[in-house]
Picture 1: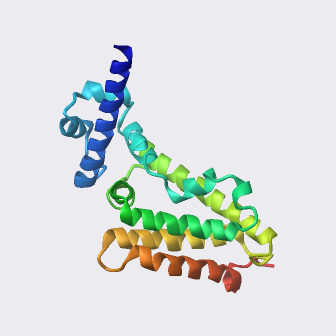
Picture 2: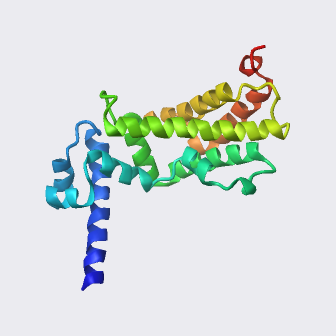
Length: 212
């Protein structure tokens, strides 16, 4: 009986997250309430609060079911890419873009994050979470770029922070453009060339060098 109860609780939790994805995607994050999610999941508000502290906690659970590229970069052990950090950076982003095209859940969650959040309160836990993820991800990307510099894959005087900001802006811009207008180009086909171009620019752009 205990095992059955636990399984039922897990099923309910999963159903609530599924419903949240649908509601957040249809109404936008800011315009969605836990009552809307409860109705869509066919559960009570009390059932939602049993599993989640608030909407921010539910949003976190929804995001955790999708591996974001900056999180993937951080999760990979250094030993697996020590010989070629630039290839690791490139392959992680390319694989992510292709997965977005092929995986409905990833595409829907990213659409919510980038295009349907409408957050205006900088103290909102969801805003704070997104900002923390961005800053941590930027740090991880810069760390990998520094490893590439150490292996002479990139210039010794590269401003790795500026380079990380530039690279992140390009690839996230590419993703957001496709999410906004998926029919305008084939993301899986375009992504490798765009990402390669961004990485190649790090080696030759004098504007990304440290100022002396």
